[in-house]
Each structure stands twice: as C-alpha cells, then as structure tokens.
Amino acid sequence: MASFTANMKLLLFFGLVAFALADVARFDGELYLNILFPKRGLCCHLQVDFWSPDSEDLVTIDINVDIHVPARYLDMVYTILEQSGIEYEIFIEDVQSAINRQANSGASPRAHSYTKYNTWSEIESWISSIASSNPSLISKQVIGQTYEGRSMHLLKLGKSSGSAKPAVFIDCGIHAREWISPAFCQWYVKEALEKYGSDSEMTNLLNTMDVYVLPVFNVDGYVYSHTTDRMWRKTRSRLSGTSCRGTDPNRNFDAGWCTIGASSNPCSETFCGKTPESEIEAKNVADFIRSNKSTIKAYITVHSYSQLLLFPYSYSYGLAADHSELMSVAKGASSALTSLYGTRYTYGPGASTIYPAAGGSDDWAYDLGVKYSYTFELRDTGYYGFLLPESQIKPTCEETMLAVNYITSYVLKNL
Ligand code: ARG
Ligand code: ZN
Image 1 (spheres, protein in one colour):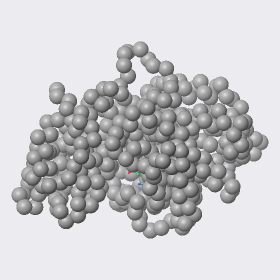
Image 2 (image 1 turned 135 degrees about the vertical axis):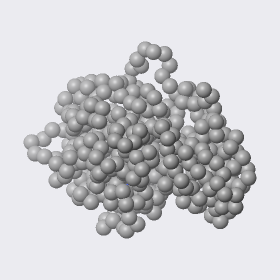
Image 3 (image 1 turned 60 degrees about the vertical axis):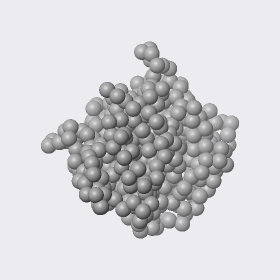
Image 4 (image 1 turned 45 degrees about the vertical axis):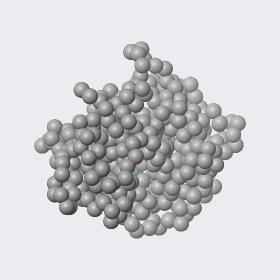
C-alpha cells in the first residue's frame, strides 16, 4: 500500500474561506470528513487525521489546522486547496517515512535511554531498576490496572519522613502519540535523583515534599502507538454498538463532562466516554488523587505539542478563583523555560488560550481543591508535531525542567 502522506498546515482566514465542516461519519474505524463548500455544494469525502486541534469538532474559523492526509486523498486535497485559495504549508512530505526513520531498527531490544523514545517494556524495566537502586529517595506502587491489564506504576520521589508530606503529582502520556511526554517524566525522575544532595532547590523540594510521577498514564494506547498506529491518541477500551475503540482520557474526567469541546461519538478523537471516569485509567488516577487530596498541592499534566502552559478553566470561559496567581506562576515558569534555548511558550487559561474542552484532568484536579493545576503542551509548534525527533528530547526536557522547578519551588514557598 502506498504510504505517501503529507502533513499540511492550513491557515483558515476569517471571511476568506467560509467553509463548514460537517457530516462526520466513520466506517470500520475510518473517519470520513465531508468538507462543504457553500458555493459548490458537497465537494468530497476524505479521511484526515487531525493533529491540531485534536479533532474536527474543535475546528473554528480563523485558526491554524494541522492535518495528516492519507496518500490516496492527496490529489483531491490539493485540488480543494487550490480552488478555495486556502493558504497551506507542507511540514512533512511523507509521514510514513518520517515514522519509519524513527522506528526501532533491528529486532533486538534496545536499552533504556533518556534521549530516545522508550517502549513500554523498556519503561517498565526502567521503573523497577530505578526504584530499587535508590530506596531512600524513591518508591514505586501500582495504582491499578489498565483496560488491557497492564500495571499503572507510580513513582514517589522524596526523602522519607515520619509524617505525611505535602506533595506534587505529575503525569505523562495521557495521550498515546505524544511521545515526548513520557520522555519528560523519565527525565524528571533522573534529574531529581541526580540533583538531590548537590542542587539546593531539588534537595529542599525532596526534603519537604513528595513528588509523585506517573510515567505513562495511557499505557495501552502508548503500546498501540508503538506497535500498530503511531498516531493513536485515545485509550483502547471497547464499547458495545460500535467498532470504534477508545475514549479520550482527557475528556473523561468529571469536570463539566462532555458539555463542550468533547464528542459523544465513540469514533471521535475527543470522545468523552460512556460516563465520567468510564476509563479505568482515569478512574485509577482520580481515585489516587482523591485519596491523597489533603497532601497534593499541585497537579501537573504533560502533553504535546504546541508550546503552551495552560491552567483552569477549559470547560468554561469563566476565570478560576485563583486566576491571577495561576497566571503569574505560569508567566514565571514560561520565562524560566524560555531562558535556556529561547523556546517561546504561550500561557493562560485553557478555554481562551486554545479552545474550550471539558472533562480534562487539570480542571477536575483544580475543582477538587488542587490549586496549582497546570497542563504543559511541550515542543514543537507543528513542524514535526508528534514526530518530534529524538535529538530534541534532551533540550525539550532540560527547558521543561526549569518551568516545572519554577512551579514546584513556588508551591514549596507558599505551603
Ligand atoms: N490539547 C489538550 C487536550 O485537548 C489540552 C488540554 C487543556 N486542558 C483541558 N482541560 N482541555 O486534551
Ligand atoms: Zn494531549
């Protein structure tokens, strides 16, 4: 099968290109998107994979759209683009060869590395070895099983003390294809262990607080993105009455659940699920945070891509009670990040900074009482998108450390 695909950035200008996206249907797991041109009537059916925003439901006028177009639709898409005058830029000429270039070479298992995208089995063995090699600073526990029966390992970093310490909770890999995110959680653990005892900021943090790190939230999806579909986003759960699989875990939390920016169509990339916490992975995390809510002071969730630092709310345009404090911490964290390599971040409340989207873990944690609740969208801004090269893991993690350390230091100072 031909694998030539293109990743295009469509710039939709207000007033210039007035087309509507409608009539979305899926057959056998494929999305067929009808693009309606008002003057010409129905133009064509095509399946596209939305990279940004996360699904067709979130497309509005006057935003940039990154889509991954299957090879068989290329001619049709070029025709549409030319006829409609939509401005576009091709970022990746051939997505399949970009994926192949990043894929594991050879059949022999590679060793774990902080500067590559590790598989789940590499991450799982890394979790065991890192925990057992540093028993005074790190412990591990399993907070539950995934839909497909994999263990959700949680690491706890911190110098043990007699009494319960205030804590920070960090998760990575809610969305399967955002591979830079689990890479960051692994990097964070490495840095914490390396810096403890030499760097006063990290030493203070781990003496006074505990940092929980969930290296991979959506383990089943992560595995599937390595073995079968590099662009998989959701969980892998099944639902009766449809052949489409998976729920968007970041639409499945009980925070304005499925009211806006989420879909009740099981075939959508932003499917909110059958009920809040219908996904066992979301329920396991929510249960853990609920049972530790008296100690958890900050919640940080790591995604990619877009270079954003977001905070509540996303389910509403209303401002959070702690808006100005959350804003000033986001500002400080962003400028700390930028100071290293000049990477520019946009920060602000989710709804107005990107788009309203209910059911997110950040809004849920905030409404539970975890005041410092942040969502990172790491590098880049769409040039490589989810296919961020491994050569960018190190600089991305280094700069992100500065932002996360800024937030945790602020939390520590304001306990
Ligand atoms: N790209 C992320 C998502 O759509 C952004 C999350 C922001 N927070 C939120 N509650 N929507 O899942
Ligand atoms: Zn995400």
